[in-house]
Image (tube, rainbow, N blue to C red; front, side, top):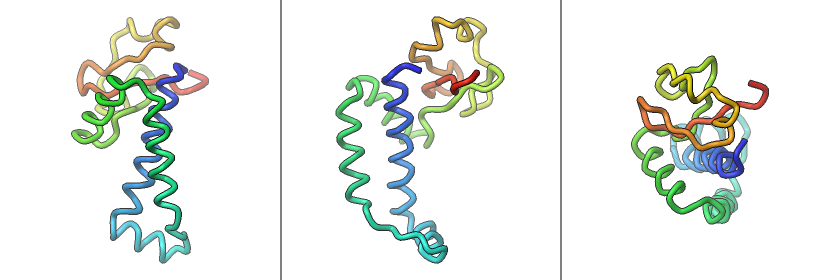
Length: 117
């Protein structure tokens, strides 16, 4: 997988964790299950550091998509975008394209191929 894509997936994971701790209802449920909600500042610092490693144009596009659609980076499974469930073009399936940053032609999300596919 492309290094920038791996960084985007990690960034999306951090954003999800931060968002879950800020949602009062979700945070209460996590606390009731025994999960400590400490370290949010560490998550934010890690996010800033990680974001600094991503190309600015790609980061900007990720943030725009994330604000509009929630999940900005989604896998391709069975030649389908798992963000909008549209079938991707067959040209995307070539081995050369698996290392490129691709965007869904339907929803605009950033696509990646999960390992082992």
